[in-house]
Image (cartoon, rainbow, N blue to C red; front, side, top):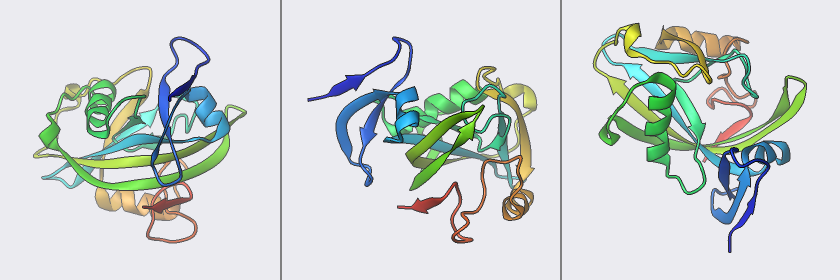
Length: 195
């Protein structure tokens, strides 16, 4: 039996999972999931340029309900109710960056468990999610015009060298929503643990 909770007809629905990422058979509206701290799933895609050892970073729009205006990984997004990780990764890269890539371009790396509670725009935001992390490697840097940024989600984009990004993360750069876990220097994320 599937229980569905919605707030508006247009709001995205997520399939809930337990603390071990096992499906619960319940769907719930995005705003309620982030209000209540329910476990759900998302995808994170890192786009790397092979010949320059750079990654594509996106800057989140100022209106985002989480980490507004901050630099983030290449592409990320929730897995909608009934969706699968790989198809969600493809969809997010196409929507946010304008890159239409075949499934074969996505290399699955690992599943990452993230726990976060904070405030954005004066409102509480809880993000308990499992991130399916993928890598896309491009042979060479594409011209900036090849990227068609989704104006509702992405304010800007840049290429950054892996070494420079690593230094920013180690320094705890406040402009980036990616940093080392305070409990260990080997985990990346907001109070996260790899699973």
